[in-house]
Image (cartoon, rainbow, N blue to C red; front, side, top):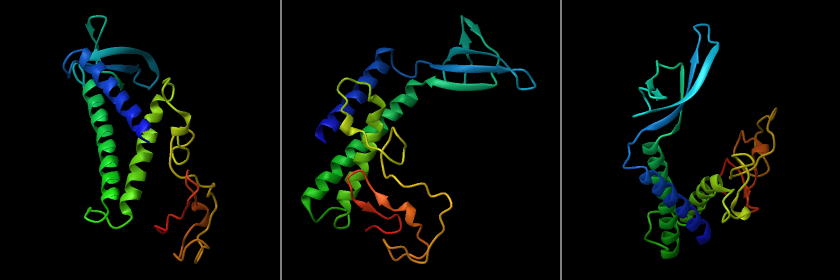
Length: 196
């Protein structure tokens, strides 16, 4: 997984360099603004920039009136927060792997550090999939499951119409919904009612 961590970290570094190439943030945001009639009918939409995500908004050198809707498509300060969050998940993964290799003395209950590292790695897989069109991205890094076709986690059969049972065959928890049990991306069985 070192290659995945290196790939993801490199993409975060590239994103940060791009932000700072434009100047020291905050240096403005770009947004898609929608203007509507009083009855809700859309009059027009435009792309504008502002100093902050709250406006005021400017397009073609003119300040625009307050829009009905604002969708911020680029905010360098928020982007830096996303980068910091991604780096924090990588750091948590590295600390969990290190704790697992040290054995006792970590802050984790025995065996829990591997699970935590696995969860962090799943989050990194999901986040790195945002760059699945990058030439260095590897298809085997993409996990499938909870986040749909593009994300990772566990896959469950459709549970529409399931009723709880007194005790399913995979655990002894009363009220378990058996169809929520399944295999993760590594072929391990998982029941949400138990940690086993």
